[in-house]
Length: 339
Image (cartoon, rainbow, N blue to C red):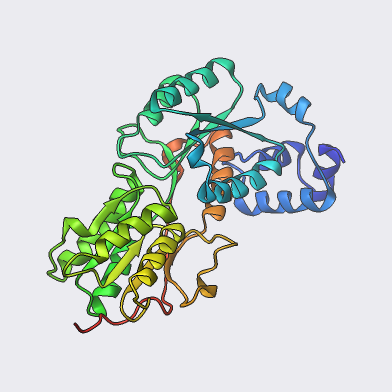
């Protein structure tokens, strides 16, 4: 099927159909969805070579990972969503792995010089992200998965981490918990800083002082979480509840609780952040896990849409999405134990 055939089928001009398929912002969302659905049903795929010749684009977007460790379950889920959206437009994803921050900046300069990508995705940003500043300087369009506080407006999609942690912490406080441990992400990453703000705001609102010994910053892995939770459970007084930054972290905390001879949901409570991994279902855990929940795969798909909009000419300062985070209460969060 040719573009002309698809346009005739829809009763639209070829220009409108082309702009809808390529994410141009002036096309109404209803029209874009109608065109995308028809293209999918009728098996229309643009000729990639012709499209690249006509637009001067490389037909690829880039993603730079800071070390092989970043290609973990979170990134895999994100790429699943992003890849599905890009594949529908015959756009490739070029993934580059670097060993250091200096190499990462060099990688962006190299990609700009080679013109191998039309846009970049920046993930896990810091509060003042120099990668974003560099890409602006290099003139490479990009969308941020998260937010940064640099002076120039940038395109971004983020979840409301502050509100999510404020609600989760507030729920535990309402259950009588006062020694609440926070196992957070790496210090300086915007999402981790925003989660800490929510945690501290909830404590302050109830007049509960925070204990630095109950706050940690680290990568989201089972083993690190196990060692951290193990050390915290040896404190006196010990924490009666944990806020786990991810489901991988929650597994480590759960293991430490069991090793200490305690029962989750009775002796110790926990609320974890759930990125909605298909192979780690909070409902199926025993006891079932209370969570703040937001799908990282859906975020990847939506960022794919936003990249297309930016490439279609939509201004970066008009591409800002803040997603609410759902609080799902299950069996792992119970009343504070009486000592």
